[in-house]
Image 1 (cartoon, rainbow, N blue to C red):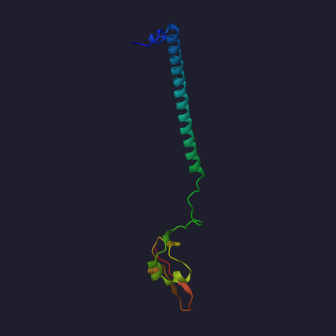
Image 2 (cartoon, rainbow, N blue to C red):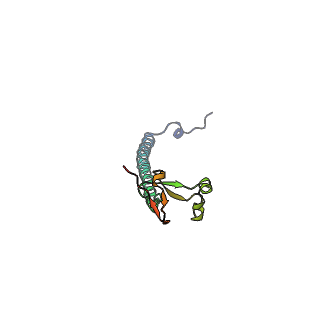
Length: 128
């Protein structure tokens, strides 16, 4: 025995039309929502890119050496071995890790200073 009423058996024509009208409206709203979400995602990506650029341009620049090395000089970071082999560096207050300039042209015996008879330093010139 069925306890169904005539209303429950089949929906009326108006009910079917109303149902499909609502479904069409829901489909339109879903389409609009997907468009809005796509636009939002694009703006978020643009914002992230702008933040990355801002961070790049506002980052502190790498430290430039305060003084440029003169021509013919090469930067050298002092090691413990350098201090052991050159005690005059320690006397000048140079420590391990300091950056000093070293001549890129090794000194030859002809270009080293020599003492004259009157104890004055003279530099021999190389004849070319």
